[in-house]
Image (cartoon, rainbow, N blue to C red; front, side, top):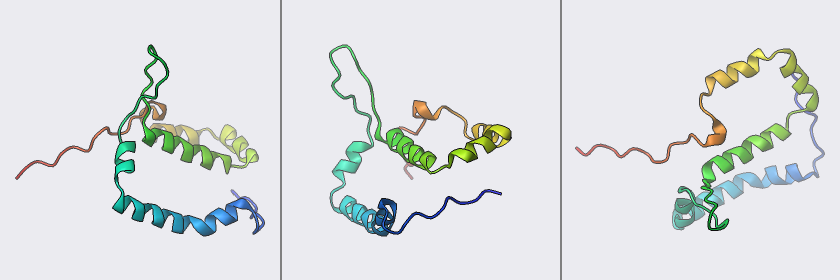
Length: 117
């Protein structure tokens, strides 16, 4: 059986963040309601200036998704990785269930427009 990681002391940084995360999310939605331009700007792919010959398109959605997945991976205890190596069928099932290369950013570029009635 998998056991959850031991609880952290109440004075840790994660406890501080958990107490404030709900309010921070609510505040971000309220800000987006009144000032939507930064969020709309993040929806599009941008190329940071890396020189005249280098063109590297960067999209915020795959970057934020990779940050969330990386953060979630840090919560996995190292001893649990041994379970994955002993039973790789769970890992293979997850890879089969999620087709496409997540590193390539296979997220929809645009939402299809609704047909006009």
